[in-house]
Length: 576
Image (cartoon, rainbow, N blue to C red; front, side, top):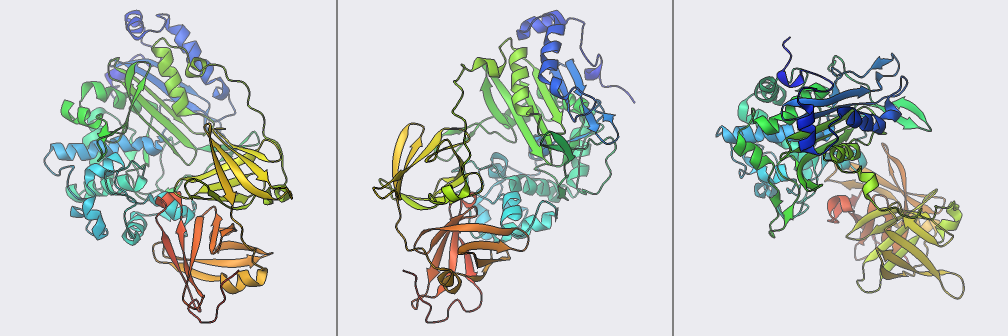
């Protein structure tokens, strides 16, 4: 096997390194950079941990390449330059390149509607173009979140492209007008890979091998369509619990595009240098790929065609990262310096994206990112509070100025707050009545009345104080919960049934694949839980017909569940 010229001198290129290093900004003594990078990865440079492979390239040369830790803990197999990793979402730049190559060949245009190629999608997809898919501005559902959290699938199932298409066929409407918003969506890239297959008459895996991987000499890279396929030299991925590592599960996905590309660190070095050589895709293709998108209102967004375009240390950086099944990956390329960095890891304890940018800073003669930030005082630690104590805060609140509803749900060690139209966050106690989210940029202080009952919440959002008054409602009895709300509900959009059940005076959403998810009443005929807000609808006789579920996953557009059975029966009583 012929060694590609880029990979000659595998660990450090010593010839002319001083000139290269000086132009970058780091110490011409390459041992100094090596030591600093090694320090970043010292935690995984051990004979009993998973780890990572790292490469730094410059102008066609490998400046640094090092592997840390084990590819397989059970058999003590070390990570080497020939170890294969799942790239997760770092696969997306390759999918975008495939589409751009077909455009270059005159096989398609980016402004073609997706239904020109996949007509089984709903009529509203006529407004969605290939460009919208590439930019993540389509308004389509992200299949992974919906299928694994709402539609009856779990991460232990096999996912096929047909499953994704059937879910998208059921989507009642777009989440937003195409091009008006940016919302990261894996379904976009699953559809793009299918477009490549339908246009070329070949499998996506076969076509990308011929037109991307083979021309670049990426001999160990491929997209996988069959998750049961054996992959030589594949790293096992691990997650950590209480200091011990456990085997992570590779997701059972039988299609490619948004992820499910496999590569070695040597192949990633070749890919990074293609941003310089344009061996695959000419200058027009690479420049189009690396151009920031503009939304419909003219505002600029950081995401181009399959890559992010960021500013770091006064340089433009082309970037993507990924995380899937405990594989964590990142790639960065600095065009002006012709500098590339990639990290492939088999444990989420390696923060690949953060470490990649810290290495970039070192290469540009800057302090590590963590040293650039001014020292902050240690935040006040979270305290322990019992669920019984936190239950007194659960319920509905309405923000005075806007009328927006806020729901608070008590869980074992935290409160979950859901703001209608904005989203959900977790809040942990800093004292009996004060809570903060993990980032500590939103804080909630609960306010009692003269009788000691909680009557309001002061919500501090980055220094802006919003008052939310508690919504006064009569707590329904167990009999009322059973009579009014309990029963099965069918959702056509998800193709699944949820059952609402009263248990110990609480209403829970039950699904045979997900178990019970608790709800808390926030207003008359309104409940809130981790599935979002549930707003019930009744007929003229007061019988519950169904509910609309609103959650940030769906941009707070309603997803309807119809009560099955006697939901339309007369004589059902509305609660007080």
